[in-house]
Image 1: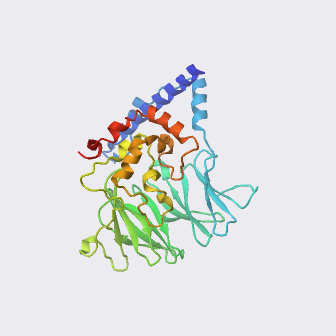
Image 2: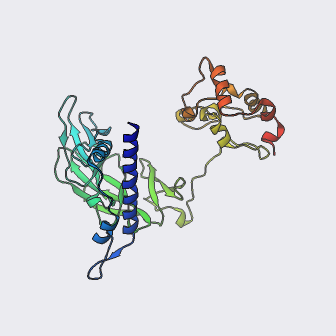
Image 3: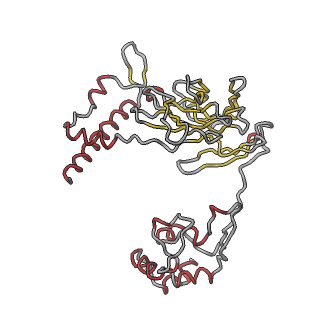
Length: 356
């Protein structure tokens, strides 16, 4: 069994590296016959980097590992009578519908192009789907009757990616983003269901998305500034008020847990040593407005540093807001203190630990 797993792993790695080489070679447009620039690799390049054929037995194991075709969770119709979901049982992800418990599923979309369910319209008569044509990774947005039928384009353009923002509560319009104006910038559009016409709502440069919206039409926009960071701005489409007008500015955040400047504090050391979020911040996932639950005074910090075993939890539970100490917390906490190599109380309560 061990040798078989090693062979499967080796085959997967070989296929991965070969595929990566093909992608790398095809990322630069290749000049084909006639001088036309194409975004696909030439047949010669594909043949050069094609992976060697795998043995039949190994290929069977690899196929079994990739052949995962369970349905997704799906979305209910507004009346709760229908469930729309994705299922790849046909070989590519398509949208299906089931009309009640123990009913036979009905396939709504087909073909080889992956199609993803994005939303169910408020009236339940249509669904919104995203389809990637030809594996180009430039999905478009479409409407489809909930009873089944042809896809009606909301937005589709070769070489352009579109993503659903949200559907207005009254179902009259659909907001989406697309990088049709510039490849490295996403504009925001509103698609009117009555006229089947899209209008530009916001077109400033940047990787913009819609983070939230208000019933009065105001939007909370997010501009990605990195792979894990974003800036947030309020925007009113009715007045077009935004930072470029000089009247708007990023949302001002109020710091709730604010320590004095003479205190040195590092989140990472606490998280890595088994101190969970809720230990200091409480169950923020249940707070309509974040509030401070701990005093954050020196005596509060020192009490924990004297006996950290009372607060330690497994690293797998760090972000579990509902975690509570068990009946044998002192025993389990002491074991975690040993495993995490936490220093003794003399070091933890030293003045220089928190004041540098």
